[in-house]
Length: 249
Image (cartoon, rainbow, N blue to C red; front, side):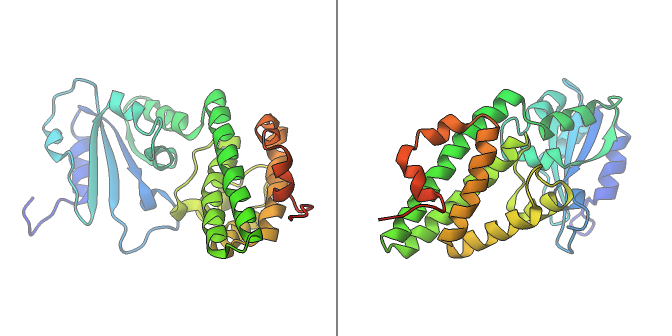
């Protein structure tokens, strides 16, 4: 394509669909999320090639314009993408444009959308401890009059909290851009989407200590119910500072 005639999404899809080396086309990003498309949205497309295939389409690897971003990978590379990594959520919610593997592309995406039981347990364990650490620092700094530090720690805690909550449901955490979209359409079991979103917003913005402590009681119950009580118990008496009943000195 010339500079005056840039490669378009529709043109490339037609080109790729006519090439037998292509076994899958997968669209990710805002165009794979209903209601999230804006006039700035481009097309982020994975082009999946049969392993060891030879095709001229490899010349488009790394193609990036305002309207079209292409990632050209082998099938083996596609299986590994985001496992682990930041791409996992994007692919978990991606939209299939072409699947020449009799549902094989769909099965690969489904695997990315569901964390393994052991993987999720280990990840949740680490994120629970990180969440408790940031929460504890926030509450302690607030107690000691370090308001700015308390707010920063509160904001940090939210990142670990969201990782934890999605891990408990064996799901990759969505990007911040898609958090509300994800929770509205796919609520976390046992959690009110409205409660979660309001708490995340207020704690991130203000570091509200009372709200942090109230939220911790909900997190503690969920964590203990899923076998993570040992992580919390390791905090000993420091848990008292995190709970609503805490009588901070």
